[in-house]
Amino acid sequence: MARIIDGKALAATTRARVAEEAAAFTREHGRAPGLEVVLVGEDPASVVYTRNKEKAAAEVGIRGALHRLPASASQRELLEFVARLNADDAVDGILVQLPLPKGLDADAILDAIDPAKDVDGFHPLNAGLLAVGRGGLVPCTPKGCLALLDHDLATEGEPLDLAGKHAVVIGRSNIVGKPMAQLLLARNATVTIAHSRTRDLPALCREADILVAAVGRARMVRGGWLKAGAIVLDVGINRDADGKLCGDVDTTEALSHAAAVTPVPGGVGPMTIAMLLSNTLLAARARLAASAAP
Ligand code: NDP
Image (cartoon, rainbow, N blue to C red; front, side, top):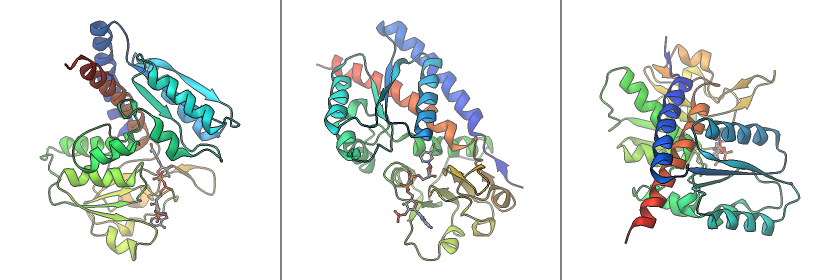
């Protein structure tokens, strides 16, 4: 029977660490780190996600607000809003919740965010820095996945060594799949990225020491797709035919094949928010260091 990787517990530990560091930042600099979350429209899932982010930030002593713009907001209005946040020195992190309503150009909005405040890590500059292995702000979900992996390996008392391990990432989105693959590659894993045109996905998955599923298809990855002893990170957030929340992996089946599996809910999701808070602190420190530099 596989072990369940407890994302809630690790997220709680991470949030507690961020709270301590945010308090130290506030003491040292006379202001708290600041995160501004922008929600355009009324997408029900986005309303919940942004409220959770606002609440989580407040709980760790990060200052800021959730700004709600109507779905009718124009591209220009949104760009002007982002420009105001860019210009505000007390703002360290800016997050524009995706997806945006139809008619708004998400790429142009993400491009407009100051890369130093891009706590989602979606700006092309940050994506490029990750690709060339030069740091920058890293997208929260893949960063959280890597933290879960490290934590799980550490719990087992093995060395934190992903070198030569075959990691298969299903999904090639800019926000999860691609940055996940970059992070694993940077840790010397041998990485394969699969997507909707990949042939014989089950056979490919059976070769994976580490499998990351970021697809958006309820329980698509079956137990028989998994190599014995694999570590499985399930990023998917889906509703099954009965309306029940589930991941991209059939967790019940996976538990009898893999070595370790993240549950949905309670796996990758909580880590995503914890990493957002951590990125906000990193951005705040980096901005202060940059302004102090001669
Ligand atoms: P996207 O829709 O942007 O990407 C999905 C990827 O899955 C694409 O690359 C697509 O391939 C691939 N894909 C689709 N169908 C198949 C298939 N049958 N076989 C193999 N690959 C397939 O999704 P995201 O990356 O934004 O999100 C993925 C999932 O993760 C969603 O469920 C989302 O809700 C969840 N999510 C969870 C987060 C969390 O905090 N836990 C955060 C972000 C996302 P192609 O490129 O060829 O179309």
